[in-house]
Length: 131
Image (cartoon, rainbow, N blue to C red; front, side, top):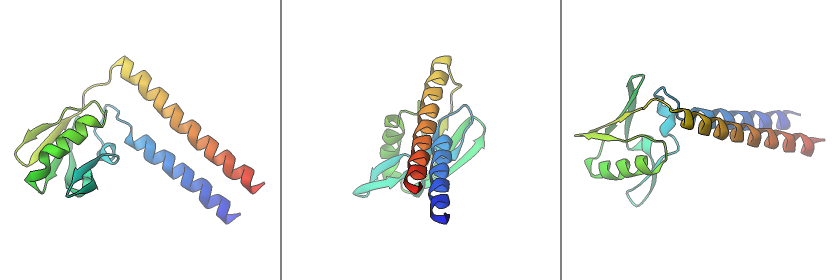
């Protein structure tokens, strides 16, 4: 029974991480968790290339440690389909979070419901396996 409980909790934790990665109108450093940069010969998570901070509710900043990867980080952010245009200022990359349009809100609703449905299916499969 404990094994089933831990599997279901893992599915719920995964759903929470997916929800946190969705871009809403508030800046959240976890939005960048799914972005990987082709740096140093491998795919490196963005949070390992610099400090990510939230100076205000509409802006994220990335303090990059190595100037040679700034252009790679910028390209990765643009290709991530978050709808954010990075602004480079020396070692600092600013990510202004635009307000959500009605079209983007509807798109986010579809994505969130897809995440929820996938988690429901995973929990049903765990329950079915247990039974």
